[in-house]
Each structure stands twice: as C-alpha cells, then as structure tokens.
Amino acid sequence: MRLMSFIGNLVWLLLGGIVMAVLWAVAGLLLCITIVGIPFGLQCFKFAGFVLWPFGRTVEVGNFGVGGLLGNIIWILLLGWELCIAHLFVGAVLCLTIIGIPFGLQHLKLAMLAILPFGARIHRSDWHRRTVFY
Image (cartoon, rainbow, N blue to C red; front, side, top):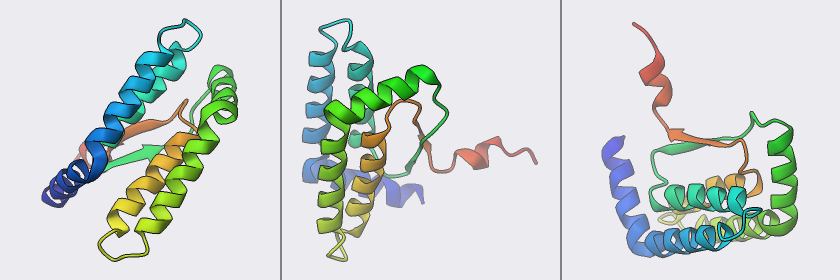
C-alpha cells in the first residue's frame, strides 16, 4: 500500500502537484499579510501540504465549533465554492480515463477540503491501525 501511494505521489508531483502546492502556499502568504486573513492563510497552507502529497492520506471533515462554523461560512462565500467546483470538475474529467481515476479521486478529496477546511483533519490512511492495541 505504501509503495503504491509513493508511486502515485511521484506521478502526481510530475503532473502538476508541485505547481499547485506552490500556488496554494503563495495564496497562504498573501492572505497572511493581514491579521484578518491569517486563519484563511493557514488553511491555504493546509491545502498546500495536502496537494503536495495526497496519496495515502485521508480527510476527516467535522469537529469544528462556533469559530470554525463562522470561518467555514466566510470561506465558502469568498473562496470555497469556486475551489470546490474546480476540483469536482477536474476530478470528474480525470475519472473519464482509467489512468486518471486515482488522480480524479484525489481531486474529490481536495473538493471536500475546499468546501469545509476549518475543523478538517488530514491524516495517513492507515492511522487507525497505529492506534489499535493488541
């Protein structure tokens, strides 16, 4: 499983993952210029890290309080819905080919994170195996 994730991530990087991660990091830096934009910039950095190495990692949405709810509402109105639609469109187009299906599924993960970034957790896909006591 880890070897396939590694190979998938290498192909992802070569096919645009590095460029997308750099763009998300630059957006995060621009948002962090103002104090009000810092929480949104931090979410862009979360995106950048996930876009850089998405295979073998999952997104768990939820567990946000009132602040996270307000942040998600503002995010959806300003940035999130456009990003979600873009990732859904690219993911659907990539899923039309057999080779593109794994990359399309990664865009679907990015769409989920793009719509509700506050309160989302990104962790390795096998995280539950490490927490089980035998």
